[in-house]
Image (cartoon, rainbow, N blue to C red; front, side, top):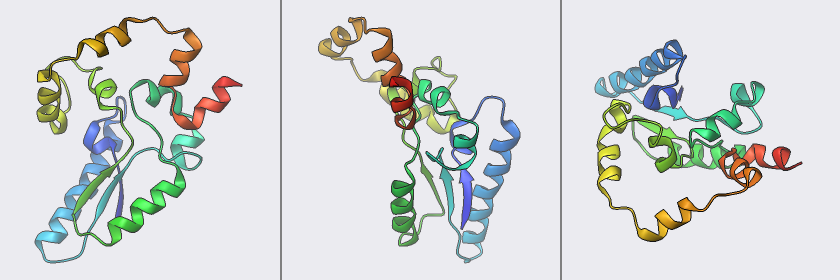
Length: 157
């Protein structure tokens, strides 16, 4: 079992070395599988409360990109489920896809997401969605909705 990072799937500005190292682990899982050996590479997103993301308090920054944090109890449930399945690679991270993909100009998204991005951009936006987006939100409400769940309480205080 390899604990990789979602950075190898989604990219991570300024962390090309981190993404490349984790992509190697993902490739290693596929190589082992090709040899008939067991392997699972889990591309974990940021975990709330523990790990490097919590240590460096990146939740506000990634929240602005549409990426949330994995509560430890939820992460353990996912891990338990994955132990009973057999994919060679799985990405695990909470994402608001419309927000995450909105940061890329058409054609500039990571290759892994290119097809999904094309599909999302081809879906017509409902008039009710446009109306709700046009209403200005108070700044604190905007900050709370954009912040990672683990940071919302501290921001409100």
